[in-house]
Length: 149
Image (cartoon, rainbow, N blue to C red; front, side, top):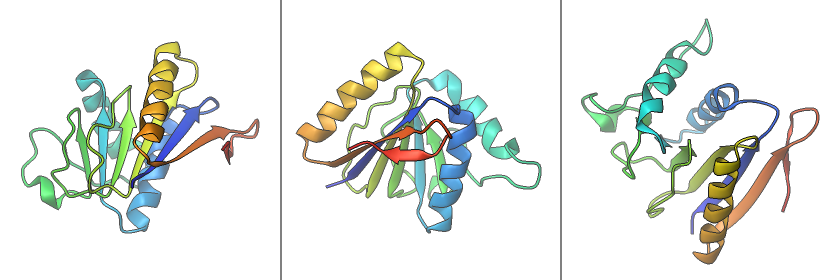
């Protein structure tokens, strides 16, 4: 079964957290899909990954780019896996859909947004009911991730 992680963002924003998690994923040799529940937010994600640091960028592609299979990170608003990723990050309220072939699915949700929290609760229950290995992570007052279950 797929390992499903829930990251409750309280101290830092998605824009502050996602690039670091993607860097770690690439360092581990993983291929990644970042799935947004809002197609309007794909362009800002694309821009973030090109410019989040002055000395670096994250190689990625998305809708409209050719040869998806060559991109180590793929941005989408669909339940797809064109780069044969083994990790999927779900943002902006995206649903997991088919987890087949994934080693890990990571939900990142804004703890200050009641709709995102409600969707995360629903997704958490669905992942448990599907028999996935589910963990929930919350930021400590110092901003470190702490496993809650």
